[in-house]
Length: 359
Image 1: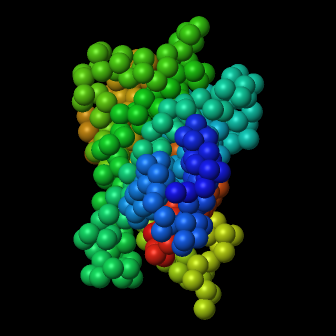
Image 2: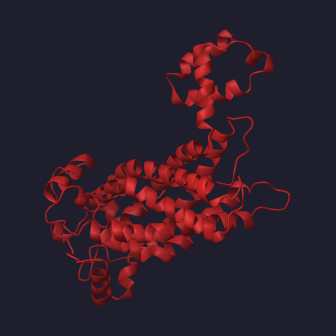
Image 3: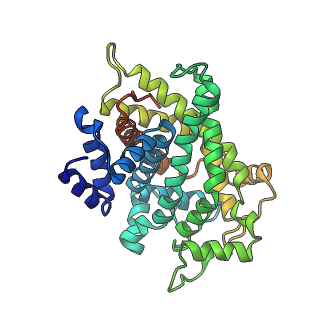
């Protein structure tokens, strides 16, 4: 039987998620003689939870969710500004200004809420999106691409594996992404939107309105083709470049690079992946508001959209908003990869016979 102190700590932990994780470490540090004794029902459940959550795919899922929430909140103002710039076509100049001026305009008109507008929905979307992305990458890597456990994959294998993970995560979370786009622009000072309503609809209200008035399920997946076309290479490049740079930054006789080098690897991978696939992101945003009153572009398809954008706005039209996007990439991807690795290593470390993998 475990000590009364441990049992009491266990009951307190049930009321506090942070203490639950602490209790997992406490259980891990018990002496061999204590483990040999019969366990209470609660202690047995803690051991089973520790064993389950330390599984590589489960740990990657949880760590991916944490990484997504951290990275999006850090750069929320720049993320919203990027969207506002992306949806501006020729003749729309409400946000045709420098990044600093645009952020100042957003602050004057909407305050702190303007900086965080749509971030709640974005976090609700990005937590499962990031969790599915990292865990599916781990699953595909172990189940399909590794010839033997812990094998080092080639860059091409990492690219394909990451692309599959990106497509998987998009299909699971796309409706929340399109709602986030609507929420981001509905309070902006675009003249086409008319006078701002006194009360702006929330996430679920917007979701229901789109479903009822814009075509049901198909409305919630509008723009998914250019999204998948952009996400697959973006996620693939992100994983491939990160693991390659991470390996390069790991010194001899060193198992893992330090946190600063992990941050650098994340920043580089994000910048490369975003720059290569950014036009797909612009297309995604345009299609997501294609039926929105006052802002709709009425494109007939992906190729028609590219033709119209390039014809009216030039090649630069496909890169609108890339400056705030690149400014947010470094802190976003750096914090994402670092928080993912720290959380993942902590969770996999709960099992004494497990060594953390690279991913």
